[in-house]
Image (cartoon, rainbow, N blue to C red; front, top):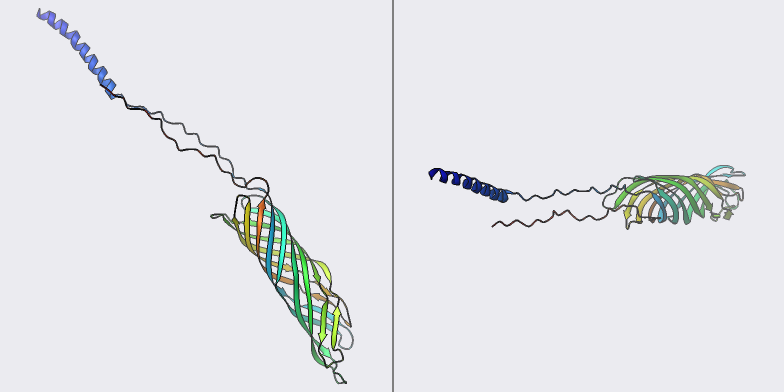
Length: 290
């Protein structure tokens, strides 16, 4: 009888142990979250190349470098014309191409509005009534306007909060048109009065140096604020008249402040990746055990 009880108790103990083990396994089973697979978005290079058009206005402080001319007669020889140019406004436009992030080129055409010139010459005059020739001074008035064509290249020095500083240089030509020059000698001399010299017009070599900043207004429109130094080579200024001329100016230098707009043709310049919401792991409700 005792042996029979032992035989019955052994299987019962094994079954109970198996049940406890299974229950323990159910309680200890961890909640498994699937690790998300993150797809890295395709890297699309930023688009920066493309055509653009531009328009500019400016104001220049001009530097007249003097002029030389020849006189004939008893006081013949080489003479020098001194003078000053007033400030002048300009307007222009052009077309260009953005090659990459740091380099762009364009071709521009600018018109410099009429710029007044006041000057004087020192020479020799004969007093009225005879006498030995003596030094005298005459006054000169004229004006010029000019068209300037330049092929330009710029280096953009990086963009900081939408502002891009740059430097540049241009080379080309200028069509300078001098108006008639009025040369006047005051009273008291045999030569007193006004002589008109016909103005000259010609194409000349020109170059420019630039620096400034571009401000991004929209994806396609930029505001350009800058400085330009322009040098126009020497050329004929006025024709011969009354024993004097022709005259050749020694070049014109300008220091100019400019403002303009650049409009990008075609698509925008910047790539914007599509919006991807942040990853959220799937929700698994907790298991309830009784």
